[in-house]
Image (tube, rainbow, N blue to C red; front, side, top):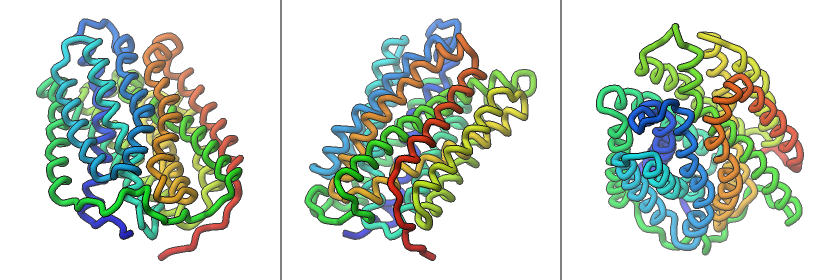
Amino acid sequence: MHPPTRTVAILLNLAHALDHLALMIFATAVAAIAADFGFARWEDLMPYGAGAFLMFGLASLPAGRLGDLWGRRQMILVFFFGLGATALLTAITRDAWQMAVSLTLLGVFSAIYHPVGIPMLVQGATRPGATIGINGLSGNLGIAAAALVTGLLVKTLGWRAAFAVPGLACIALGVVFARVVPRETEPPAQRTRKAAVVLDRPQLARVLVVMTVASACGGMLFNLTTNGNARLLDERLRGVVQDPGLLGALLAAVYAVASVAQVVVGRLIDRFPLKPLQITVVLMQVPLLVLAAYAQGWGLYAAMLGMMVLIFGGIPFTDATIVRYVDDRMRSRVAGARLALSAGISSLAVWALGPAVKSAGFDTLLLGMAGIAAFTAVVVAWLPGEPAPARSG
């Protein structure tokens, strides 16, 4: 089994970018959509987007199973065309409930990428940490693009174009993927490649439990920030920056800079044991979230940059754990099961975001997030010890 070619890797990384971009459009454009649908406050419309993130978790389970048993190439094609079609469907919705249904369908197709695309990308990789880091950078650049492109499209063409343009791009990339990516000679379930670190059943079960809980906590921080940062900036920079396009550009800059953290962490994962590295990154999130709770103006912007560097920097650990401990023949199924639980739980953050901010404010929300980060560090401490991976380069 050989690692994917450079062209395939580029397409898979672009798919990751589009996956996150599509999921973030609603949160970025929610104020414009709420006004169009007759809502007085954006917070009241926000819960209607929770279905996308719920299905992003729940649909990962069948997606991962199909990826291992049917084939990862076929599932990525379903991802491209399905995500593109549902983005176009969302662009023509006329009320909040139609929006909720179309976003839920969008979540079903967006769920395919992580349990299928990432195992496809790292299969046969000699430096999986670096590969995961670059892939993570691509995904979070998609979030940055959502902040920038969605803001510009909403301002110039309206919120419907913010869904339609990425939808068409997704379908176009699906056509390219179908043409250039060769068919698999066998489904992954028939492969025999072993994990980098072999554990007995009790230890492996412990790793998977810790990974799932830590992933759910990290997913809550990720969902709360990426879905709430646009509104947080709007609130805390009021009187300093008024233009929605500039606010979108400022948020895109935060995500672009923070995304580089995944490349750095990915390289560190190839050189050092996971456990102390993950605990360090997670604990560093706590003071930045507390600082962001009380900061205003440009001080808030600086605190946001710091907290997003650390939240994004924590993302590669889940996929690195799967690569290190799980055989390739079942990685999509393990990733799908993990996502079904952790992303399903963390999707509650999207549902609760609007009501929480409306009742308690961003300061209380950010302090609660600091508590989640501290709890995550305690959970990760239960990982078994391991030798450092072989140094490369």
